[in-house]
Every structure is written in C-alpha cells, then in structure tokens.
Image (cartoon, rainbow, N blue to C red):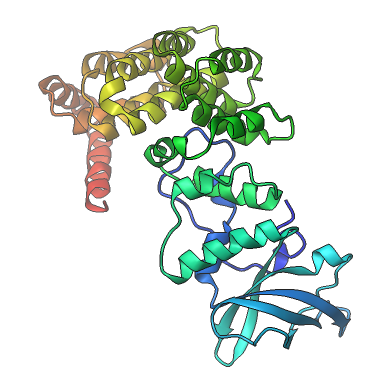
Length: 379
C-alpha cells in the first residue's frame, strides 16, 4: 500500500486502539491508522502537488515546495498558492508528487503531519466524502466502508477494510446487505484479494443467503490453509449462515476434536465470540456447546472461562469448577481463570469453591478478588 509508505517517517500521530473490533477480519487493525483518524487530528488538509526539493545539509534537512490545489479542511493557503514545507521530500515520479497533505498548527507555523498519496480521481472522491463528514463532526457508518471494499483504487479499499476491521461485530453484520452479492463474489474469487479480507467477504456474501454460494464456501473451507485463521473464521460463520445445522455441527466438531490443530480450533472458538456478539440469544445453545468443548480441550480453557465470566453466562459453572482439579488443566493461567470466574459467579457452588481455595492459598484469592474489584471500578 502506497499511502504513508514514502513518507511514513514524518507521521507523528498517536496510534489508536479500538475497544472492539471485527472478529472475522484478519490482521491487526491496531497497528495502522485510517484516513478518517488523520483527517480528525489535522488542523488543515489540502490536496496538492510537490515541487522542487532542496537539501540543505548532510543531516537530511531541507525544503520542498508544495502547490496547493484545493483545501479540504481548515484555513490554509488558497488554491494555486505555493507553500514551503520545512522538510526535504524528493519524489521519484509524478505519481508520488500529488497527494493529500495534513498539517498541524503550531503557534504561527503549519507543520506537516503526514502525506497520503493517491493514484486516481476516484480516490479523491472518497477523501472528499470522508472530509465532508469529518468537518460536520460525523463518523461514517460501517455500511459506507463496506461499500468501498471493492473500490478500484487499492488505497481506498485498504483504508475501508481497516475501518470495517475496527467496527463491532454487530455493526459488521448489520452492514452485510449494503453491498451487492455479485460484487462480493468477485472479490472472494479474485486471487489478488488479500487473505486477511477473505473471511469478512465470505461472511458478507453469505448474508445475502443465496443457496448457490454454499458449495463455494464449503470448497474454500476445505482448502483454506491452517495459518489463515481470519479466512477460516469468516468461512465458518458463512457456513452457519447458509446452512445453520451443518455449519454448527462442523464448527463444534472442530472444537471438540483433539486431533485438529490449535489454529483451526482457535478459529472455531472465535466464531463463537462473533456469534455471541451478533445474535447471543438465538445462538446461545450452540455457543455454550462450543464453550464446553473449549473448556474440556485444555489449551482453550482459559479463553473460554474468561469470556463466560465477562458475559456473566454461568451455565457451565459445574464443568468449569471440576476442570480446576483435572491434570490436563494443571497450569497457572487456566487455574487463575477458573478462580476469577468463581469469584465473580453468583452460584452457591462457586462461593464454596472459592472458600476451599482460600484455605490452601489465601493470598491468591485475595489478589484475584482485589483485581476484579479494580476492574469493576475502572469500567
């Protein structure tokens, strides 16, 4: 992706960490910034073209001319005026000269915050729409970004995917019908589509509920590599949407089969989280079956127990408390997760369990009780 590649070193914005993110999207959305975030932080945003660059010394200091073509945000120079950037920014070709320039006001000076290059007028239209919304104090909807996933400009589609990846699961599901299935089908079958987007696209396609897509989803699920968990998550969710009974059977069998690799089982576990975030009551029985399988597995037990505690789903209290004494679950991380669950659980058996652990290790119970109290106070 060319945006923020040539000029990454000049970007000083703080990385933001979303509190919730799309479970079906691959990659890590926290490590990259979106154009919308940059537009919000900038005091001025202009479309312009770089001119001659002058190197002043061996330390890389210099000046670069900028011709302002249009002002998208803030009070800046009028179109057609020249502005001198206090940086040496040589360009190799004309395509690298034009872009979106973001500035921060520092007393009487405009300081360059970052540059976003673009390759097409279609990309500029996307920027115009985002800027219009930002200037009004509005945040674009997930539906808006879903509709850009197949944008012909790769920079736009990448930025749109990053925005979707930072959306809550319920928002992603609600936006599923905002893009035509034939567009999603083309994306899913296009070998150039990045792997971290395929799972999301498969789920969005399945939400159109066209029976003919079932074979495509099943075939891709058979062929997906184990090291593409994001794709597998989306395909499993798509399978459930298109054929609920068989899709759930496949997902639960994956979780329960000890011969299945950890990455595949972890992907199936993440599908439980997505379904809970999307339709918790409709899918509750199957989610609980999957959580039970994850608890029994051992290597997913701490994750399952912690999620159930956060959800305040106390249905599996009996098996969770039993697991504390299983040799297969004899690890500090699993036992601490179980004790955290028991401390917060209103079931009488959990209170009795905590008292028994306190007799053997009062400091551990005290530590976990205080940690949970702090967690509640900081919400």
